[in-house]
Image (cartoon, rainbow, N blue to C red):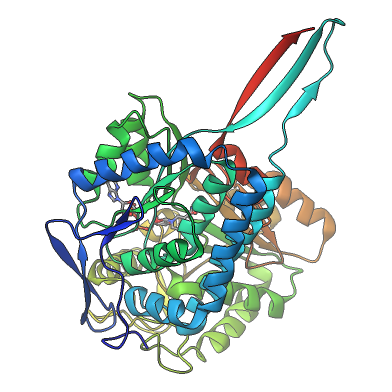
Length: 478
Ligand code: NAD
């Protein structure tokens, strides 16, 4: 239970100290709006303290032997796992997601720490054969410097550890700003970092309900050398522009608009199982959520029937209640967005084949819309909720064209048993990630990230270190 029994960390964590700040903001349970905690509202002054601390700590953290940095990361991951129940309950309380999903998220978040603990030891450089005998050419990988990490509310632990793991493994220090809706999870992580002995200043967390006053300060600070951001395309674009003046390194994990393609020869049961994960994880509030279902007309009816049967079993309710699959949406704006997208689709000719138009409650039961066309806003925008949008395609070629009809390019899913078709989709899809007969692609070992308006940079995998390292080439005359 998270409640009055447990003391929550609610202050900013800066230079190994808990700082209360001059103002606080209220974090609420998305299920019933009940206040959970009053959290320090970080401002420019706290932001400065954090970036100065990160800059000081960088000098010693970067020179700490990589295996020692790795050991501390592994210890933090292990502490998360040891504390999974408490951390998961806290996540469900402030984010609303089903408790089983929060448990999964804590494990997923910890996996980035253990993965990068190993990668710290493997941040190899290169020896390059020179073209004359009296030269030696070497490439070293160095940490880029103190980093500012900005994370969203939908995966409060994992979006942070996916960045922190890579940054700390590379030898960078960090200032981090969690989303205003979910700062408590990040602060709980900071408590564990303190407990396992990560030195002061290496991780600094500044919560706030005025993001630009903190992030703007970090972007203006010459001490911060990189910004790692996960969130909306709109905010990502703004930060990228702001980073231009100081030429900071930037990586952006932005919005998605994933197509979920089911071809005529697909295993429909497997496709439905994949669709349930790809669509309904976190009540549809995921950047890799299936946004546009593209169904070959040959299987559209039987697939829809099977999907509706599976959806009918989903239970919506308070995330901490047993058996609940879908918790509340994060806030009233999220519900209003769904209503706007659904109304627009219905006005342009779509039909509801399961469920009904949501009211004002944040508890939204799944809705299935058929007859989607490219003119509808739901085809263009991230839905971020439990709404299935179905469109048919005449054949494989048509399906691929439809799948690529988006300015986003994060992930695409395709279901087909035909190996040649699989390959044609893998080659033809304009996305950073592809799930082939697979509805869940995210894992610490793989490079997560997008192209086009879904951003750039990769998180996780051996490539995850690249965004936090700079190459230094050394030519030596011997
Ligand atoms: P958001 O862009 O509103 O907020 C993300 C973060 O940016 C938050 O910490 C927020 O406080 C901060 N922020 C907002 N305005 C800012 C400003 N002007 N200056 C500095 N910081 C600012 O996004 P959100 O609503 O929290 O999250 C949902 C979005 O995140 C969706 O678009 C989703 O697709 C995307 N997302 C992407 C990935 C990915 O890996 N590609 C993963 C999860 C979520």
